Image (tube, rainbow, N blue to C red; front, side, top):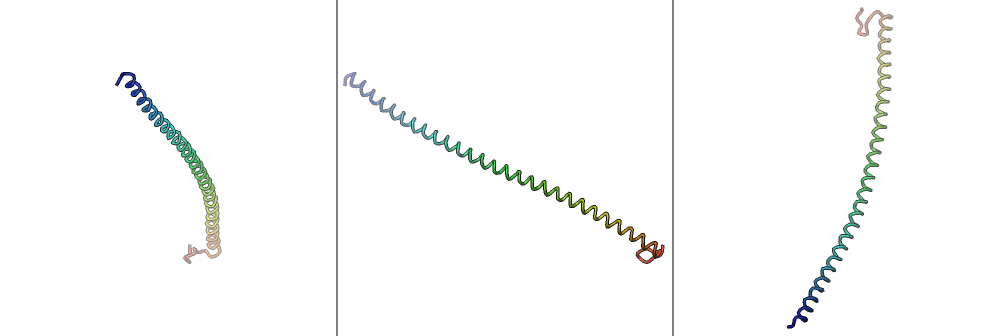
Length: 109
């Protein structure tokens, strides 16, 4: 084999090898592009889920706040009614003492 034919054979082998590497590189870049697209979609999905979660959390916070206001209001009303009931009871006891001169249990004072 002479030098020129050997050189041509090596050059063709190198060109074929380079073509294979170019093909692999193109496939690799294609896979990277596809993965980037999927990653962007996944990130968008996660952001949407995070927004929904934040909205639910905010709605829960508002419900809790409204519930606590109701509890405070009911507690305030109950305290007022209980104090009025205690006051009425004490006034009735004083009235009975004046009328009958005795405690409610029947013993004289």
